[in-house]
Length: 252
Image (cartoon, rainbow, N blue to C red; front, side):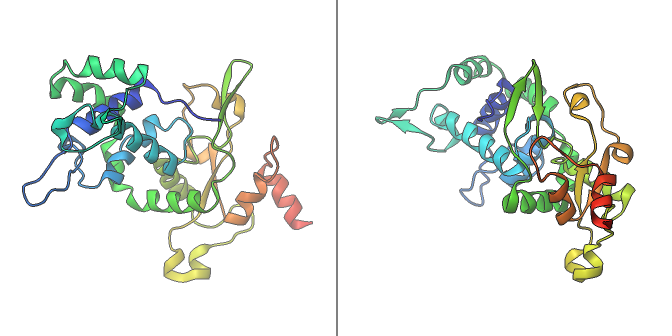
């Protein structure tokens, strides 16, 4: 099931499209200077915690890039080609057109004050966590990406805390790098290559996940698991094993 793009996604896409920087030393267009990075991948990461809405990291970056591309042909001053149809800029979707009209009348500083509320500039320091998360999701995409509605509540099968680089870092700092079920330690087995690596699993009941005001506690709500144990707790749809249940299966 497709996750619909929000107004906030389109606002960010407009900002990235209109205010990309073109340094004098070459023709490459870089992210807006406000984001404090010269990498587009890192620029997209800045918005991940706030706007991913259940998307995987890879899917979120693709969504934001496509949204940026959608505005390019309507903002020729940015130096990018964009999407065309019959030699004319491809028509914007209704929500994109609404954002375009609203933002095109604002100054850069005014737009940035809106966009800034969706950013986490500290996330740039989480390069290793993003790299690990991307590798995990690229290989197996733990669970399902879809968001669906049931009884008026939104459920995300693999929720944002498992996808959050910040949550990963805090959970590993608290729980260590050894699997809490089988004790497997990547560094002990793989040496330097495995140093600092472990997967993070949420222990939050779905009923609490549906509450947008719920604040995750890395100590009580998250656990660290090796890849095998993580796959086992999520193996069957509609049933997530507790750590105690998995330990019991392993011991038996």
